[in-house]
Image (cartoon, rainbow, N blue to C red):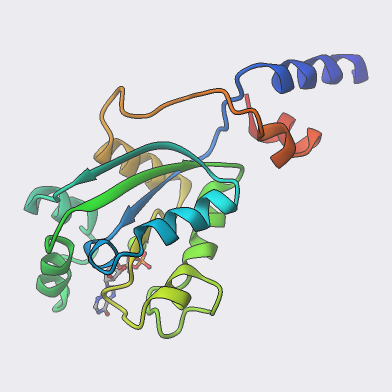
Amino acid sequence: MIICCTEQLLKKLTNLITIMEKTLILIKPNAIQRGIMGDIVTRFERKALRSAGMKMMFLTDEILAEHYAHLVERPFYPYLKASMQAGPVIALCLEGAEAVETVRQMVGVTNSRKALPGTIRGDFSMSGEQNVVHASDSVENAQIEINRFFKEGELFDYESAVTRFEYGGEETLKYMK
Ligand code: IDP
Ligand code: MG
């Protein structure tokens, strides 16, 4: 058993490692206008989350209504829609062990004024609506959202020289393939 695990681990440490969990970020138009998209991407990079895909795009009425289906009947939806179409967004697919939960914690609660200092919303926004980023709220929704914003061929699996310095052996066995 120990030999088997060691071989498996060595294989994972020396070959291309696929991190299993992915999540979807949208850097909202207000963040791009305010010139803080680099700061936001830097937060994720420093956390050792790996970028699997990134693209700039305008959101159509259709994709927005699908993405915010749980909010389309709310009175503030017209404002939310206008703010999400005020310019392009950046869609970013991040991967890492327990990436969905970790990123949600990094982003902070919806109302930026209540978001803790140290979170992205807590540090970069004063607004409940113009709250700089979207992040998937569950593993299941992350997969749906990644498929919504990225087409086949727009996500990349690549060798990383540093993954073995970012995760321990047990984590590598548990979260990567
Ligand atoms: P989340 O972005 O933290 O997951 P959701 O409830 O899914 O929060 O709402 C999606 C987006 O809709 C929020 O990020 C925010 O931009 C906007 N929003 C949510 N609640 C309100 C509100 O009460 N007033 C104005 N905008 C809101
Ligand atoms: Mg949400």
